[in-house]
Image (cartoon, rainbow, N blue to C red; front, side):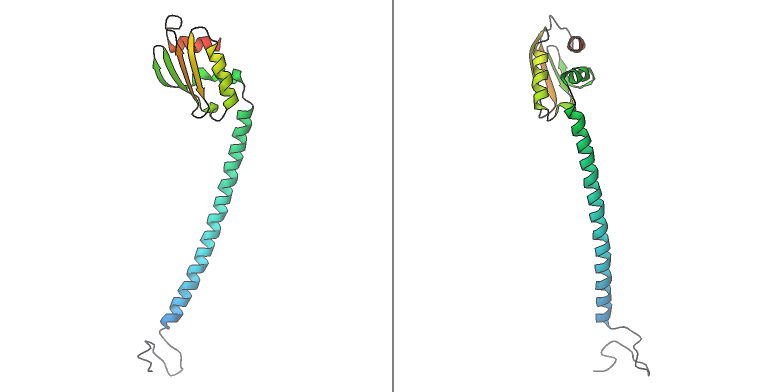
Length: 150
């Protein structure tokens, strides 16, 4: 083979002015592997930190939710998001009830005990409170929330 067919130019000293394409590819592959390794290490580090942060927040939230009582829920009902409100029927959203089955049962019993409430359903799956009430005794949602707070 000649120097021209290898795409290299050889000087009198025997060194090439244009590097061999295989050497370029090998060098590029090594650099890419190093960059990929650094990037992957950084991504893993950030992921581990996000998981740690998520677990800390989750633990804090569980601690707060575990300390909730029926009085806390009843006090929070007036500030709940009103999903729907028609005379005789109201649906409220209270996210702190999600996953709190025992507390939801207590809340259902307490709401059913309010004079004028015909039926109440509290979902631990959605954090939704549905109250069906007699409009002769409880004319509005505001009156219902006042009765619950009393």
